[in-house]
Length: 192
Image (cartoon, rainbow, N blue to C red; front, side, top):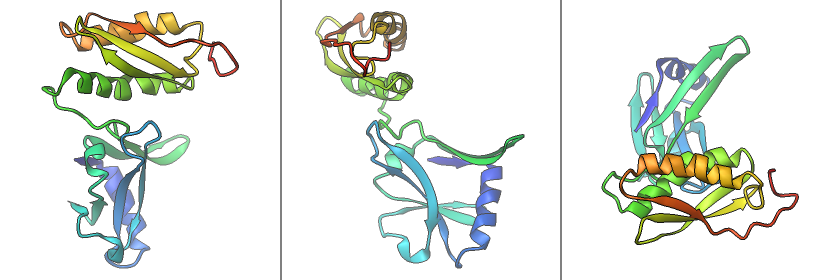
């Protein structure tokens, strides 16, 4: 479920040395499965462990994950990185914003996961996002842009050269293209 590097494990052991006995590390997701999902790590005193929590044993400490966060922390990685700027703990959770779906899940679910995990993180850097309106019977994924993408002069390039190319490759033979149905209105919110 969660991979914690040796360096991060050593870091946690040092941090826990100054805490009350039997204190653990809690790894969690706030607003899981949404665009505003955020991951975190905190101390977890012994009396804060709930019956439905999952306990993950590591060398020198245990990590605790609540049942709601569990599917969103699949493939999560925690590392402790040191460089010339100093040291920092990193937590990468590719499924925090969208729950990973099986390869044999319905096409719409797989496309939705792809958009949430691959497309929207890139659009978010411009304050934008995209969502599925529908997938037509002839394999066209109908999308609607929001945020900074609405009214952006580069939206056609983003759609055809970015999103469509990625999706045709990812869903080869299952989809034939993408279409934008957004009623674009340029304004201060538009990225370009």
